[in-house]
Amino acid sequence: MNRVLVVLPSLGRGGAERHAVLIATALDPARWEPHVLAFADGPLRAELSAAGIDTTVQELPHGARAIPAAAAAIRKSVAELEPQLISGHDVLVEAATRLAIRDRAVPNITWKHTYGHIGHRGLRERLFEKATGRAVTRYGAVCHTQVRYLTDELGLPATKVAVVPNAVAVPPAAQPLPGGPPTVLMAAAMRADKDHALVLRAWPRVLERFPDARLRLAGDGPCRAELQASGVPNVEFLGLRSDGEALLRDAHLLVLASYAIECFPYAALEAMAAGRGVVSTDVGGLPELVDDGVTGRLVPPHDHAALAEALIEGLTDATGPLPQWGRAGHARARAVFGLDRWAERIDDLFDELTGSRAAAPAHLYERTAP
Image (cartoon, rainbow, N blue to C red; front, side, top):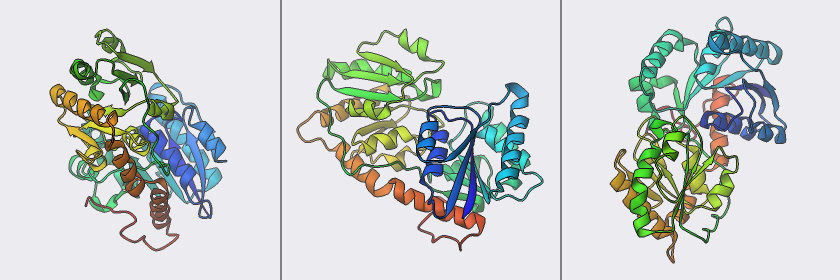
């Protein structure tokens, strides 16, 4: 049995953190012995504990000392566990891992969870990869569209990129749609690039068609105060929530409005798995998720009129006599993005990286976009 060290920035509820915890808990226990190293505690620890996964949380100092401290913690874990593979998530983890194994030949995979950066961070990541990328055995992409960004923008070699699209546990049947007022859920950090402001701008048009509709915003961030001050009616600011399944049960529709750096969001996957339609901007990997006009709608970023019409169409479908979007989304999630098939892909990719088995068949994972 091979040991894999899964390193992540925290056990909070972010996309990279969710991905890392899914790897640790979904690997075949007959083939892999996962160990988790995180640099801050959080609610995802409960899932690791329930699965019996060995977990270490090493708090880091702030500022310039964080990366050296993280590298020291990784070196210690490598010395103690002697893992056959390191699976790393997040920029801090990438830097610390490469520093930690600079004098050790440990196979490793760096998972990329973004589809671009705002401002100077893109240039910084390109320079970082140019300087240290030789230490990486494989880069993991979480959707096919992302490969263009990784190769064209970051300059990563296509031969080093493996694509394993994100997945979630999908129940056998979709959740029944709720009674009560038509409800739209948005679950996203309240940052400018998530563009909650666009949704608020579109919302009055939705209320003209559905006067009792509710817009529920789950999340927090630097834009929250400004958004709350907008005074748009029938909007609930829920703050950080850990009951995503319950929020989806009470919603008819999920909306995402990012104009940049959205990749393959778990919020959309989880909504489809629950049998909810998804209205989203047409960015990043969202076209791989949302079948426009079948499981939801894709609209141009920054277009509040198109977003309003899509939300009206989605609520009309979800509150009508024969809802279609949610049912089709659940079927698509179950057929394409189920967790069991994803776990098999991860198992086989890890086998190849450690030399445990011959390279996996091409249909299990791909190194380039289709």
